[in-house]
Amino acid sequence: MAVKAVWIGVVISGAMAGLEAQETAAPTAPAVYARFETAAELQVFPTDISPRYGEELSEGAVVQVRGTHGAFREVVLPLGVLGYVHKKFTTDIEAGLVSSKVKRLAFRYRPQAGEAPVALVDSGTQFRVAGDAGDWWIVRHAAGSAWVPSKSIVTFDEPNDTLVAAYASLGKQHRKVCDDTMQEIDSARAAATLAAQQNEQLESLRARFRDEMRKPVGEQSFTAIQADTAALIATTAEEDGFHKLATRFQDRVKMQVTIVEATMVANEPAKPADVDVVPTQPEVDPMSTFDAIGWLRHSRTASGRARVVLMKGEQVLFRLDCSTGRYDLSMFEGLEVGVRGPRARPTSESIRVLDVERIEVIRAASKRR
Image (cartoon, rainbow, N blue to C red; front, top):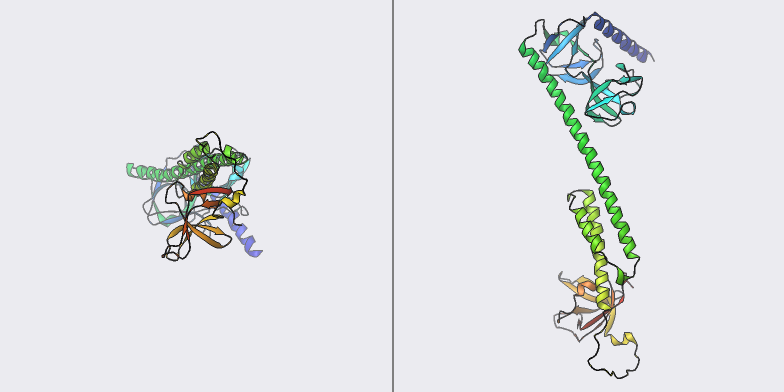
């Protein structure tokens, strides 16, 4: 408690000293310029233990000076001193500026709400934004000033063109930081708006896909969804996380298109016979017409060579081939099918090979049995 009391006393006495020094400065006097002989941090109060604003001016920097207190001089910067205001109590940023929207807004030298502020400003006071610190804006307070040790600067009672130009140059440097910050904020806002729009478009595509999936397989059509998905992906960069989400959805649509096409091919009606009278055939079990029934999978040999196999449970029944080229066996991946065709066991194969002459889909669900 003793330490806290001493600190409060220092802050109050420093504030009063600063106020007295400001009152001694003649507001109508011509500007007095000073050049930093050594680099120095800007202080909140004219005391040896004053807190710092977190801004240091380098050797050769030119500022204006007004008040004096002991071994310290009050300095004025072109755009004002650098500090913090809470976003909760300021208006939305516009053209690089924010304004106080409360009667007494605290201007602070660091983003710490539990401390006494450097100044309390009136409603409507404007600040130029120089950075974003989460819940706080880093701003320049045009009416604010700072203190530096008198020994760190040399003053000039008569301004010259060189001093005026150097002072203006410092203002340009500070203004560039503010302009760059505004560009970053605008870019971030534009990116957030674009991300929201893209997410909304992707969710709309997913809804359309779900609606299409509710239809019978033969009535499903994904042409428009595929085109709109490709157009959406074209607006993204490959390194974006959203690009990966959209591409994953695109792959899901392609898989369903493959299932639809495979089902349509398998269920394609047989061509009518050339003769008008077809002899009556005895009824047979449809399953008995196949040479083998199982799940079509892609696998690899021990040497790493890709192959298409027919499996039942975990057992490989045949390696499948289609020498006629009538069927693209990859279209039936993950489906339960019935196949017909000659069988052989080549000397180079450890399992039998079935040359597919006909294939039919039995189940369209892609899960193991």
